[in-house]
Length: 404
Image (cartoon, rainbow, N blue to C red; front, side, top):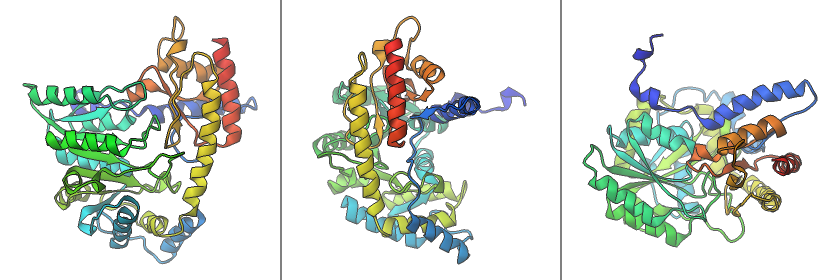
């Protein structure tokens, strides 16, 4: 293939660091298994629980009832109705079916939004640390990601946020800031924003005519006194500029079923529908019926997972906090810890990528380098793993750090 035939757009896009890590881990793990060893995986953000039986049964029933044909490209009415009810009950946001779009996972829904809003050179404001795909999806749509710094508590530096907006608006280059991406509870940090903090963000975006993408896929995993608030629930002005993203992947251990969804102004949904009509068409019909059961059926499994994640969070936070030269904040949600490892940087380990590589090669523990999230002094540790694996992995990390 002649390289010049590839688009400039695609050549600017990077591969996903998390999936690249998994491929490397698979190779190392295959080699270690021949020696009776294995890699402890704290990398990919995937629940280690199985999809609940009632949801699996709904999927099987859909197959047996031959619900295997094309559906409307943006999802079946039954699922959209369940999403409307979910937004009302859980988030205090009033939508109707015309405000709902169902896609092939939250990632595709996000990509639909980028395609609808971004012209070449338009800006999308992304707070650091950020989920790895946000910036790359902006680039794939020929936009420009503008990054906002974070404070010691891993939350948005509001003064820098205002500065980035001002700089983008006054820039003589083509494009303007159109979108701001908000993720709470946050991947990779586990940070949860308060109502007051969200209202300040909403006010700033409203004053500057910037739409908000509110990624809420971890909303059910909150710990201690933390509460989840949906930006669109505060007042109508915020609702009009907010696109609320969610999915069944994390809350119901359905990552492979690939069902995500969003609520937004019907005019936005209309444009997103065009994208989906001409790209993937409908999400898997069987998965849609399973998702319907997930949202409208028994919710006990969600609380079982949340309680188990909290036990793991408490344990792993205590262990990591005891390691010299490693700093860590207690996450309020999601299932990630984001410790600062720059205390180990030196001649041999210069950055988070080096730290993760050496940890994998020498201690056989997989973590994601913070540089992939725009925060090179940190690494992300997923505690979506069994307590047995967490204990063994922490033993290896402690020994590794002592020997550095």
